[in-house]
Each structure stands twice: as structure tokens, then as C-alpha cells.
Image 1: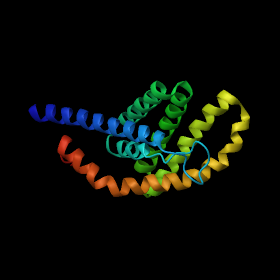
Image 2 (image 1 turned 45 degrees about the vertical axis):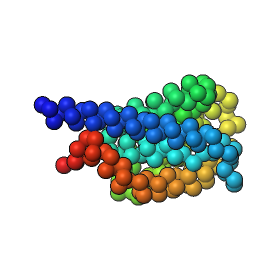
Image 3 (image 1 turned 180 degrees about the horizontal axis):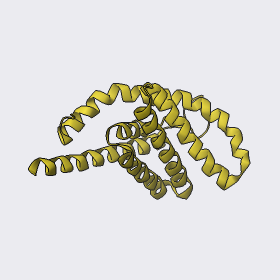
Length: 176
């Protein structure tokens, strides 16, 4: 019984740490100047590293909960439009990353690219709903940006995965 309680507490702590890390990355990214050579509004998507890890390690329901928390944070700090875009992009991206990680043998780079494209697709859908079909012309530019940013987030996940798993193992216990 005591071991079960310890694992639940560790899982809660890990979930909280991942949420804090995703929100911190999101906030820091919002402070960065526009990326040279990238389309307006494009960001690196560093918080997606956390979302991909959560999707692969905690499972889809917990990762989706983190996406909702991240969308709520955007709503509270940047307004309704940013909140809707973050939520739609985050939910689609997280579901896509989970599917790619769990159902294929794709690399982390390809997982990141698929997640970035899904994130942009969710944002374009919200923009289409808010502003009309003119935003669809921005799609090809976002696809190109997704290739670069998704590959980068996948590489960051690959490099940081051993450290993230050590923290998880410490808090929750070794995986079977």
C-alpha cells in the first residue's frame, strides 16, 4: 500500500514538474524576438518537447491534460485568440505525437515534425474560423517552418530524454 501511495505522489510531482516546464518554455519563447528567416508568429515550439515526452511516457490522457493547462495559460496571459490557438494546436500536436510515438518506429525528429505540422494545422483551423479562408494561404509557409522547428524539438527531446527519464524514475520508480 505504501509503495502505491509513493508512486501516485511521484506521478503527481512529475506531472506538476512537466506542466511547470512546459509553461516556462512557453513563457520564455514568448519573450524571444522573432526568429530570423521564419514566418511572422512562428516559434521554436520548445514546450512541445515536454508534450512529446509526456505523450510517450505518461500516456495520452495526461499529455492532453498538459495541453489544456498550456492552452489555459495562454488564455490567461495573452488573451482569447492566443488561448484558442494554443489549445487547438496543442491538443492536435499532442495527439499526433502520441500516435507517431506509440504506433510507429519514427525518429524523434519525424515525431517533432509531425507534431509541429499538427500544431500549425490546429492554429490555421482556428484562424480560418475567426478570419476566413484567406489564412489558408499561410499554410505552405507554416509547413516549411514546421520542418525546421519540428526537427529541432525532436533533436532536443532525443538529447534530453535520458535526463527526463532519470527524473521520472526517481519520482515514480523504475519502469518494468
